[in-house]
Amino acid sequence: MNLDTAGKTLGAAAIVGLVLTGCGSDNNLGGDSRAPTHRADCAGNKALTGEGSTAQLNAIGLFNRAWGQRCPGKNVSYNPTGSGAGREQFIAGRVDFGGSDSPLTPDQVDAAAKRCNGNPAWHLPLVFGPVAVVYHLDGVDPLVVNAEVLAKIFSGTITSWRDPAIVGLNRGVVFPDIEITPIYRSDSSGTTDDFQKFLAAAAPQSWTKGVGSEFQGGVGEGSQKSAGVVQAVRSTPGAIGYVEKGFADQAGMSYAQLDDGGGAVALTENAARNAIANVTFAGAGNDLRLDLDALYASTDPGAYPLVQATYEIVCSKGYAAGTSAALKSFLTTAVDSDQNRLSAAGYVPLPDNFKQRLVAAITAMG
Figure 1: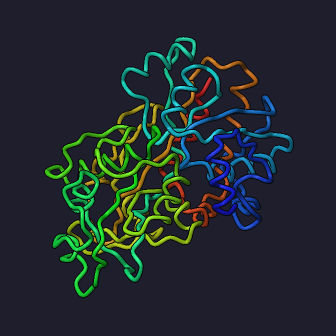
Figure 2 (figure 1 turned 180 degrees about the vertical axis):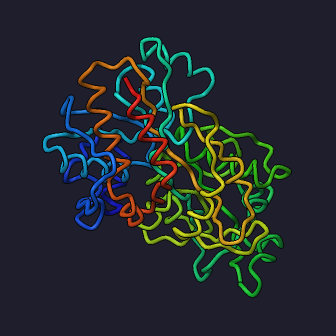
């Protein structure tokens, strides 16, 4: 799926039927070459609906392709409207699951339980994806930044590419004499939340603006959805923004290296895998919310800490029988299918310990 198609899809916020023509190809998840450990059955409804995170759009397409191949006739329609909208639509009962890069907020937890007929909603982290710091500076590649510099750029303290803090991280690089234009997500975005959480954890003295799905920095130009950020950065000399690696790769964009004390680290799958080693679950049981603070504050050499986990938010119980069976089938397929093929779409395959917890939670769904 090329960027132009992605841009049109996201820009229109149309419901996407992600079957064989979805965000995948024969080079992606399509041909699962390994027998899954917990093969999903094909029970339940033929159709499911989801809405939310644009970050997981391509992953949902790959998972759906695998599900349709394993269970012919099955299909998920996923509407990539952003994490905030996904949580709201799930709570309203308009979709079977919500896709979100951020957990339910405290005031949404009770509302989600009501939607689930008095049962708690669970967070299932099906996808890990690094966030790329994309930029538009002709002749500058690579660019090295750190959390302090990013915090000051996105809060308006650093405004020039020739600022000493940037030059000091990029010895020998000649920067153009132009102002910096920060580009942020103007819609309610889990990627924005994760980006701001990274700044707060890694540069707490410089990022005092807060966190959340709405951008708090107060400077720059806002763009709708991931494709909008890509387009804005591409068309604006001096721009810098944050977007999922898969979208940056589709657009052929340059993205920065991070140096938060352990040396400059390029955004690679191995560097993101190294960072994920710092992730822990926030609690026991089957609500698999993650504690990402240690990841975001990591200064481990060879680890790229700006990685987000994106959840499927589901009812632990309370679905109609056909919906519950279909969801369990789809989610088990997503966990068991050859996740290593997600790498080509810019994601990081799930660690084995995550797969075990996820399968246990999915099996426990009512």
